[in-house]
Length: 141
Image 1 (tube, rainbow, N blue to C red):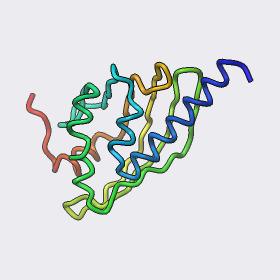
Image 2 (image 1 turned 45 degrees about the vertical axis):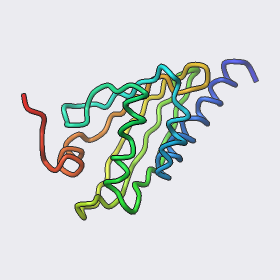
Image 3 (image 1 turned 135 degrees about the vertical axis):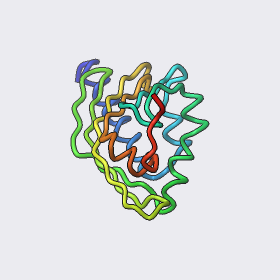
């Protein structure tokens, strides 16, 4: 196995581990997989869209899981990896604190540095985010 292929497989395994920890609600676990210089970018123009530093992620991630008292499960549907980039197609499902069942489809793009997640880009159905996670509220223009 060549170095690039070995790095690719390690990054693929780390991305899947990240989603597994996310599904388990293990905030400390998935935060530990972030590089110190990491950022998270969430698509769209919702109340939760934008770019966040590792420190901001760590400070706020538990709030997402607090909104799902019985958990928010993630299911990996496909993975494509090449070097320091891993693309994951996934679905989620969980009962929101409002009683509404939240389901969404995702494309996560992981970019790695030194075996850690440097940048995570999260693409999803932003209308579903606004409807359930944000209670129908939208950012002011």
